[in-house]
Amino acid sequence: MNTIATRLPLRPAGHLAAAVGSIYRALEGYLAPIADLAVRLWVANAFFKSGLTKIASWDSTVLLFTYEYQVPLLSPETAAYLGTFTELVFPVLLALGLAGRPAALMLFVFNIVAVISYPGLMEAGVQEHLVWGLMLLVTLSHGPGTLSLDHLIARWLGRRRA
Image (cartoon, rainbow, N blue to C red; front, side):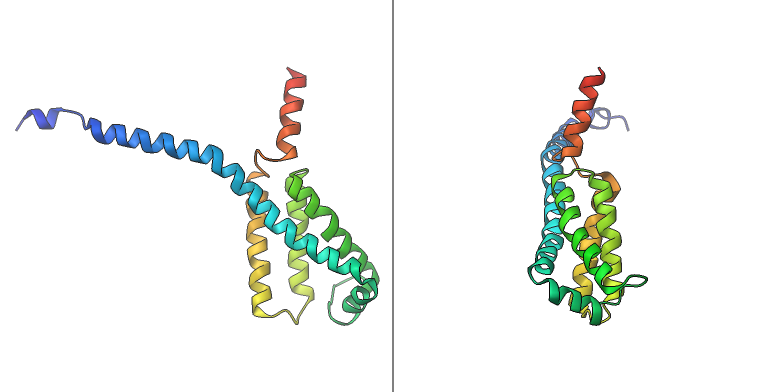
């Protein structure tokens, strides 16, 4: 049976698919960078606040690393210094998107060490660290995005070479 209906292309569906596709691409172009930035800021905020807590009372921090945290291979004082440094420097880099992947990698490893070295961490704390780890994997997998210093530097370097 060869009717007119079977020979006509489905234009309304084709136009709808094209419209949906262009809306999707537009949203991806605007929302993906904002989502990348939000992920970076969320994780950076959590780690940076922890670092600020550590420097607010250094004696308490050293005591925590001596009696609570069981960081392998490091003395409690060395672990306290390194942990505090990590929580104050790398979240800033992550938030700015400067050396975004290395900062995310460093915090990802630090996050794992934090969970392993604190046996008293309750289930809610483990879940929080899991979420942070997954969020850090987003930045590790595709970089800090277009709303980052890494992106601006890459564009600037690209223009200088041209």
